[in-house]
Amino acid sequence: MCGTENRSQLPLAAASGCSCCSTEAAPSPTAAAGATTVEFAVDGLTCGHCVQTVEKAVSAVDGVESASVDLVPGGRSRLRVQGTVDAAVMREAVTAAGYTFAGI
Image (cartoon, rainbow, N blue to C red; front, side, top):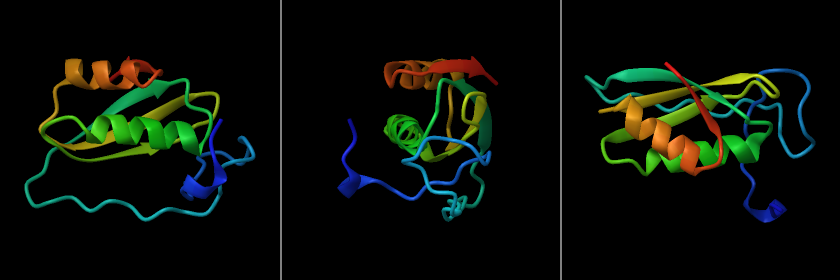
């Protein structure tokens, strides 16, 4: 169960979702000069807490400068990763966080 004191305001990609998410837009991360951005599909995310969990897990990987998720509750969400990225390592980070890595 997540505590309300540590929640971040995260956007939803659709109007529906769980009650712990905000529909207000969060600031986008800025890319460092020359950074590579790679997108992956992730299944199983339903709320802002899920997004935060995946972003935190992926951001901890060596070579990742930033990670952000476009949430699609009940659908396939998009994970954007900036930096030096290996798909196998991203799969491991996402699955270790408890979600399904659906590929590039």
